[in-house]
Image 1 (spheres, rainbow, N blue to C red):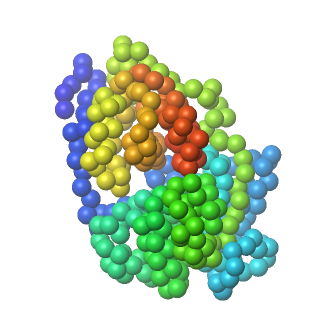
Image 2: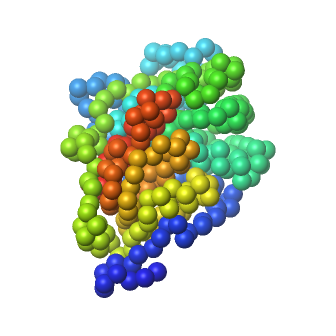
Image 3: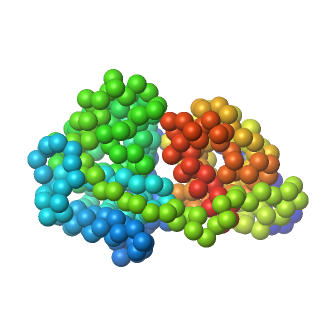
Length: 341
């Protein structure tokens, strides 16, 4: 680490190569720090979108002991009917789905419960093997899955089997996504080849729709902050005692050599992330890795300072019109908020 003046220590994320054991991955399956105290009472429902208050009521009932229903066809049920073993929060980004998911986790009085992103669970299977993962998670009271995404057929098969085994052993499920469970995978791979698996998974979930406006944009002008070179150094110095400072292209290249489940360790003990010479991304693989990185930075509530192209323009128009559109738009929302924090 080198010292810049007498204020800030600079580190390069491109020089970090974190490793996580399976046991460390399992221990990290808890809500992000900003949701440590998330509760149903602290969720501020928007009166202009009644589905938010309705979702809070349904999830409160689920968390305090709604009995799972027998498996059946995927459908919306009256709030008085028994719920399925899983609840699925379907809605746009920025409407408080993760807050509500964390509220479910925090409200459920159980010793064994887990909260993680979709990619963290698939990484756990990759690190420990499928059978070992099932054995470790079996018997848990609750599995929370944030941003449920099916980006390839392998993930579809793994998560379908995993959730099926856990549900049959009594584990309850809570998940969020921008896509209804019977439409997962559309626009990304040949979803018709996997309809049986996707629909079987959907049968485990009671869908709860949440409408609304992205809360991150309510007080922002919609444009990420772009800094000049002199402003960039001053801004990093002003944020904290340890900040990262990397060229954007070098970081993108480095992310290709670090598993996304380890991205959170890249920013351990960093007060701000600095990105120099940001440019628009045109490669899909680079873009998806950057999205995963942004999610971890946002979860850790780390501000971003950047030069070059505005981060709200980092994804090309073709990408924003493609199968991963919602994922990229969520990342833009988070990037914009992070440059203002």
